[in-house]
Image 1 (cartoon, rainbow, N blue to C red):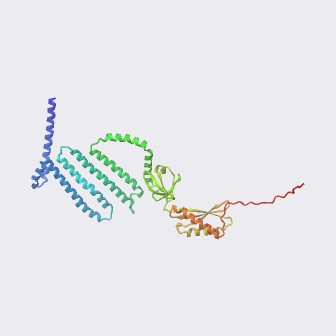
Image 2 (image 1 turned 90 degrees about the vertical axis):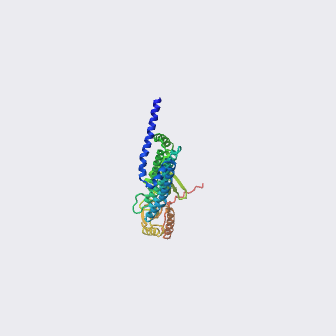
Image 3 (image 1 turned 180 degrees about the horizontal axis):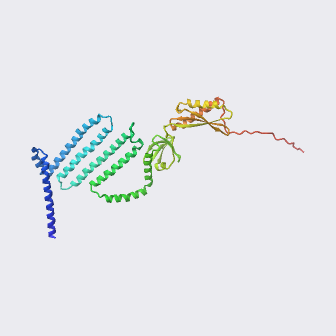
Length: 391
């Protein structure tokens, strides 16, 4: 046992001696870069760890302030001369994290050089963690600004505006995952155990929140596939009908004609039949006005009257022009349809009301009958009246 202890002490002494020699080999290299007038000062600083740490901290502050108030101001003048707004936003988002990185990284070097008896490891890890957190926040803002710029491109559309929330969420989740991984490495956390625990917890959460996850994935597919967008007027086979006011990852909100907001889970919408009345090559939609006139009416005059009414209404689109079609011979009427185009689906009910009112008035003025359900009783002959026997 004494021999083993002696051997261990000898190995420790040898290791310390090697570290001292290595440091001694490095010092001349540092001194070679300094002017001769600085060498007495450097020898004084190198002999005191606390003084060396203080000098490094002061130099870090000076360098960080120079980056923030000199370098970034010069770059701001350059970006201000361009027409692109994103470079100004990028420079503003990078100002704080670069300043924090230079300052705190210098402080970590200062703490390492000072060789505190206790707390050095904790202070260094805390400073590095603050650097990582600041970069995560900066990347959040940069991704939002970049996607907003790409989504608003008019000439060259790289990313469609409807997919911006999906890419923004993906970028933020990726930033959180990478940042969390770096933070765990900084603090020396064993990732194997955490990953195994996360797998077990993920299975449990998946079973407990399956409906929420179903809505989440459905929301991602809705954003990517875009069967509708904000402002569209849609009908669902479940009976809901209204204007889309918000598309979230969990639910979609519709504003009905009664000004009542309905929130529908995305899982329901993903499995429903959707009729998008605002879809197609443009927002306009066709409205069908059904009219029946009595047999024997002047059909040419009926067509003229219906077309005049359709063209005269100020909210009916002039292109495509209103059209009149005869659809068939009804049980008691000749069936026509006035086809008009309107700018917005929500105007359909009001415009139909106004046009129906005008049609009724004009047909009444022209003495054109609008048939209604009725029955005519014809008596072929009156029954003979028998003689009453009074006896």
